[in-house]
Amino acid sequence: MVLLAIALLATGTVAAIQFDGAAPESAEVGEEVNMSIEITEPFADPLPSQWTLEGDTELNSADWTIVAEDNTGDIVSRSDTNELQLNADDSIVTVTVEIRGEVPDGISYNYENPDEENYTAVELLRQTDSGAERVADEAIWEAHRYTAESQEARTAIDEAAQSVEEANSGEDELDSAISAYNNANFELAIDLADEAESTAEGSEQTTQFLLLGGAVVVLTAVVGGGFYVYRQRQRDTNKLR
Image 1: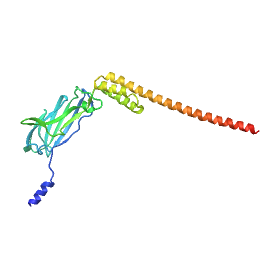
Image 2: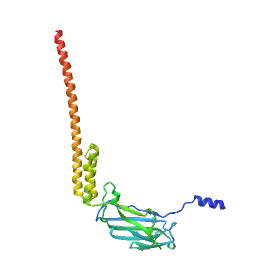
Image 3: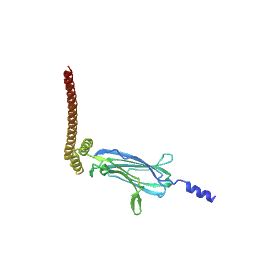
Image 4: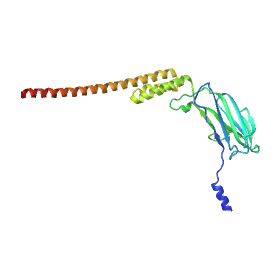
């Protein structure tokens, strides 16, 4: 019996708190977004049987709703703030966190690493004697943000980058455009991206012209050679007569 108990413990699974939710899509600064997170196993080890759930966010004018339900779907407790006391004695099995707010400004622009432009949509914490700590490592959701100007500049650079890659020309202008973007100088970034694209397209046209010119030279040589052979044969025929 002891060996069986040990075997069951060894093969058993340990429950862990689970989260079901997705961060908002990329949105413009000032736009209203919302998201919902469902928490299951809220008292799984190492969480205690009684603790306070706290939500944090960088959204502006955030509205929170936190609802705890038992296994029948009945609401056990509810909060319209970013905090809710959870107690295992209340038979809580799921907790739903909903938030709505406006995308904040304060973007640190980075064209090559868009994640640097993210903001924290939701972070779930629990209160402890030493302060608040994240409920679990994965209990944080970030989302991308932009302004109309930064989005226009990013699109211009994207298009220029494709032309530069195809033509293998215009890299210097493209690098300068990216640098301007990272410094939030979007008007300059767009101008430099246009220059990079023009340089790339000009280089590609020059390459095509040279290839066409080379083809014309080859064709001229072939035609000229053929005409020469024809004239020689004509002369040989005349001599035979």
